[in-house]
Image (cartoon, rainbow, N blue to C red; front, top):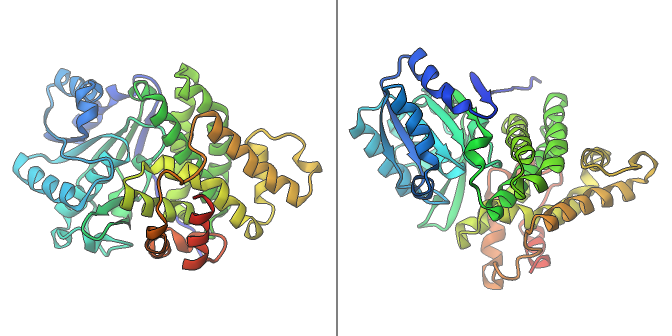
Length: 382
């Protein structure tokens, strides 16, 4: 058996890194950028920071912003038409997961037009060609979509999200500049940061985890645990730490998958439009408790990475509890709601559980599960 690692061709890290966008575009001979960014980022001038880099370098571009927080099939199809009309030859994706996921789907369909219905991209679609080259610029410290081979699209008609996993969609260049994240409000910083922690923890305990991804995930847990509170308080050190930590988590989970925290969060996002990071943060401690029997000694290392002292003197039950409590404390400290009481409805639980069970992340969960057990997990938080 072999293990595969897929990462960006090039990535830049640190304050001011967006200046490298122009040099990369010129070095690669790109002519015109199709800039994918959401309306709020344009409104508040965040997208404008990158547009200025393009303007100063004399690089042509066209902006596409018909993107929702949970991007839809329609957003993708409208984006494909806009790209075709633009004359662009590469994409600059600026934003969180929504902008980057839209950009990936657009880029894949332009290069593989037989998937224009979008739904056929679900799972591991047999695309033949790499997507249109993408330069990805995250503005949130959470999704790590700039370094993953995954994207998620919402099917509004069927009230479900579907995960697409494709090595052809990874951005060729990732630009991780903490200055692009400095205008995130506290709530979004907390939610996306807990999304990053969920990536690291689920990636560490998933069935496909191995030594190299364990290295990424444990370091990501450590960095995120040390810096998320500071990032929510908008300290320079906190922002820089979270920018790095979420990327390192992405280096790992993109290559080994996730688990039912994400499966259940996807269902909540599709039915209630729940912010993805908030859903993950609410679900993570409860699902960690459920998964604990299938994780061997890994919770001891999670607890250690989160700064818990004395883990080597603890029993298995004690260090498993300590890991869960450390996650709960971090979530509480950054203001994440404690349950689903204000979000989920009893009449939807069966549909939510069925959707989560059918989700592409579910098979990676360390503990085999069922629709009934997932439904019980939802109810336990209501």
